[in-house]
Structure formats: structure tokens, C-alpha cells
Amino acid sequence: MNENKPLQSVLDAARAQLAVWNIASASIAVVKDGETLFAGAIGTKDHKEDPADGLTLYPIASCSKAFTATALGLLATEGKLDFDTPIREYMPDFRLNDDYATEHLTIRDFLSHRSGLPRHEFAWYGTGFSRPQLMRNLKYLPLNAPVRYRWQYSNFNYLIAGALIEAVSGMPFEEFLLNKLLKPLGMDHSKVYGADLRAAENRALPFDYAEEYKMGEVKQIPYYESPAESEGEDGARVGDPTAAAGCVVSCATDMVRWLEFNLNRGKAGDEQLVSEELMDLIATPHMFLGGGDSFAPQRSSESYGLGWSIYQYRGRKMVEHGGNINGFSSTTSWLPNDKIGVFVSVNQNASMFGDAIAHSIIDALLDEADTDWYDRLYKANEEMYRQIVEVLRSFAGTPLPDTTPSHPLADYAGTYEAPGYRRVLILCEDGKLTLDFNHFTSPLEHFHYDVFATEEPLGEFPSGLAINFGTSPAGKIDTVSLLLGTEQDLAPIVFRKKE
Image (cartoon, rainbow, N blue to C red; front, side):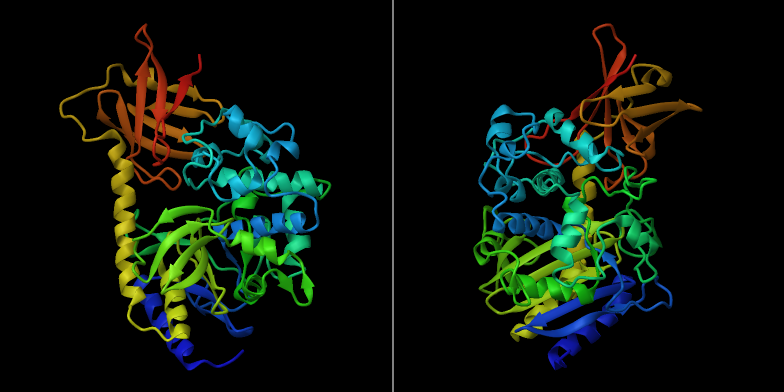
């Protein structure tokens, strides 16, 4: 590992910033011109005294999407699939909620998030549905945009990508990723099953801010675990159903290998695992997203490739992807023409601290010094939290005063169902309604008329989510509607009361 004085200065500054952001640790990997400049960690795994190091494991969440795209590139390199052949030709039982999309969409469309599928996050997150069940449920989930018309980030796109890998390879997705990609790259410490992370000794613990969407004091929270994960008596393992969207758990030492592999255009050592042409395709813009975010003007012109976001950073091509899962935030970035690669993961939920470290490192290696990324992104993080709460609480508008529910509270209780989703259970106890949905529960407070609002977070949704009840022509409460996303033209999901 080469000593680099500008880099050491950045790492010293990052250590000091841990206390400012109240973050336990950061796993950091830095490569340049084929040399490893740093592969280690700063801070502690537990907010106490156990130091993190280069082998400490962190879930990298959606940074895994590029691994999935590359695994498909490996199969394409072997001639087993083509990125522009309709998915249906490999999976005849595949169905979406739109006939044209079912017949014509290709893996390139799903990897670039241009399928027309919105997130439908609560159709998988916390449901306990198996991978085959989620694939069957796709036919019930409405598209809200024409195919190849609008970029819409959706983990379902990568569920489909993982299913394609299984169909073509004949292997479970996790085993294919581990044995055909991670091990050949020498990523020997990385995991693809959540259970292996939870059983590991050298792992970072997950944290979130104690007060909902407010930076300050922190609390330890559980690792994300799908109710569908299991290990059978025969030793067969069932991983997270949406593993292809975000299952990789890694460390700085291993992520050096991943950065080098991408900078070397698909070569691991002397072996060309994925063709250069396909590696270039994966890192080629497919959908333009725009610019002018918290990183502008230094970073602008965002596009999406296949499992990667692509930017202009100070006039240079930058390939990057972020990831967030319960208690962890990550970023992986590389500048192909400058031969720079940086990975950072922090054990803090929905944090931009890793981005601040990564951009500070890149600037140091480019000899740029016009921005205090820590100050800028701390403020941007606060603003992001404010906007999340404001947008999601705006769904119901402003509560109208002096209104009452149209029915006794007991009439709202019951089980409500919608195709493709887990049931919504409304309980009425001691004169209070409670929502039970996807293994999350929250008391409900009256908002106005037949609209109630959650008093506690629902998964990643902050409190204040509108729960809108509807009546039948006979005057009975028979539906509950939830707007479960922020995409353009997204319709509420209507759950009907089960008699």
C-alpha cells in the first residue's frame, strides 16, 4: 500500500468528521493507476471501542446492482444470453401487467430502469414473499410509464435480472454470483447471504438517528432480514428474495479487487472474465437523468447505465452507484480515464457521509481543492431528510379542522387485500386504530374525514403516511388506499376489505 500524503490528509480529516456526523466508522478502499493506496477503515464497528479494519464487513446494498449487471455480462461473454433478446425467450412464464412490456422488454431495459415499473417497494420489502412468488406477482403490479420512456428506479427490475441469471445458468443467483464472479476476483471475504453477515465476528453494526429523519443522537437498529430467508434441513439456503438488487456484503480489502476489475475492463489478473465490449456497455449511459443536484457544478449530467450511474465530474467521466440498507450507506465510484477507484461504506442509515469522504479523496487525487464536501453534504443530508418528510406527508394535503370519521372506529377494522401485495390489517383496540402491514405496525391518528395517518415510521416511510378509507354504495367501509411512492403518475394501491 503506497503512502500518499494528500490522501493521508483526507483520511485524517475524515476521522475528525466522524464525531461531527456522529458516525461510528467508514470502510474505505482507494486505488489509482493499478496501485492500492488504502484498504482499511476509520472509527469503530460499534460506536464504542472495537476498531473497524480492512476486513470488517459492511452490507453494500444497491452497490450490488453493478455486480448483477456484470454477472449477466459474464453469461453474455460465454454466449449464453444476449442483452437485447426479450426476457420472455429465456423465461416463457414471465409476465408483467402489460402485454407489450411482457413481450418486448430485454435485460438491458431492466438493468437501466426503463421498464415502466415504478418501485412498488412495499410489494416486496418486509412481505416475506419468496422469490418465485414475487416473480408471479409481477403480473399484478401496474406500470405507470410506457416502456423505455422514463427512468424509474425499481428493485423489481433487478429481481427480474436475478431470475434471468437463474434461468440461464441453472444455479441459484447467490451461488452464481459467489462462485462465478466474487471468487474469481479474489473477493474471498465477501458474502451473499445475510445470515453469513449476522454470524460473522468482524462486522460493523447498523445504526440510525434516534429521532426520525433528524441528524443527531444515534441508536443501534437490527440488520435487514427478509422473513423469506431460511436454511433447509438439507443445507439448501434461501437468501433474500431480492438478492440481485442488493445482497453483497463486503470489506475494503475485497472492494479493491472490484474497483480494479472495472478499471481493467473486465480482466481479473490475466483472465478476461467479461468482454471489454460488454464492460463498456455496462458503463455506457442508457437513460439521461439530468443534473443540478447537491454535487453540482462539480458533478453533473447524470445518466444511468446498467447498474451504474454515470456523471461528468470536473469534466471527467465518473461511474458511481450508491447503496442504502437498514443502518448502512455506501458508494462505489471510479474514473476510468484517470484510473481512480474509491469505495466507502458507513454504518449509518441514509447518510451522505460516505459520499463526502469519496469526493474528498477523488479531489485530493485530482489535485482539486475548491469544495468542503463535509460541510456541503451535511447540509444536503439535512435538506434531504426535510424533503422526504415533507413530500410523503403532503399526500393527504392539509388536514381540515372539525371533521370526524363517518363510521365508528370498529367499522374500519379488518383485513384488506390487493393483488401482488401482502394484506393490510387494521386493528381497533381501546378506541384506537392500528395498521399492520408487511411486518410493520403503527398506531393511526385521525387526519380528517375518513383519512388517518401513521404515527410511527412504516419501514423507510416516515410517520404521517396517509391511510385513506373508502365506502361501498351501501355505505360500508370496504377499501383502504395507500400511495406508496413518489413517482410521476403513480396511482394509490387500493386494498379491498375481506369479508
